Length: 195
Image 1 (spheres, helix red, strand yellow):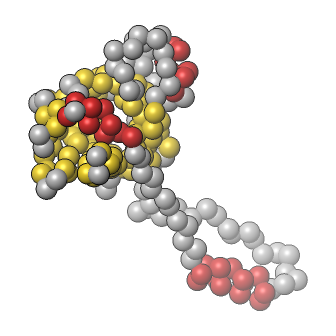
Image 2 (image 1 turned 180 degrees about the vertical axis):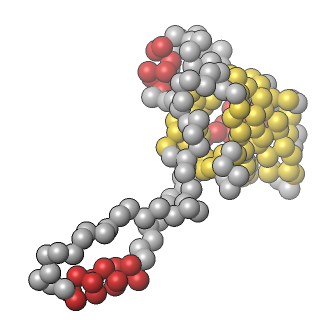
């Protein structure tokens, strides 16, 4: 029964949402300038794209084919029936080492073969090796999983979670939960990629 629980971990995914902020003062300034000189055609158009030095930019290695292979270094913290334990994961990108059909079916940027250090968390058995696919979307990254790591024929992965880049610009954070037999298993994950 416990082995069956671990295979159900990745069934529920969560999604981060963004928002748009409008600077009302800039709009008021632009409107006042235009209204002050409605007939003046000698005014230069000084509208330029605002560049905020503190504005975040997506990591430069996202889906960069010149960096191969990437390495997966992650953790998943399991929260189950009052217990909290962390699983350590290490993996290597295999995107170009597998038949192209695998990449085509998942519409992803990279596929990783990941192994877990340790065999259990909170009394639950943990799958020791598995595959993860990732698709970069700017500050977000979709993470997919393959239900059967023993399968040799290509098949489409299932969504696991949407990760968001952390404040350090290197670490991706994600979480998901699964309900099993009325108990909620909460998973919080992190992953870093390196060359």
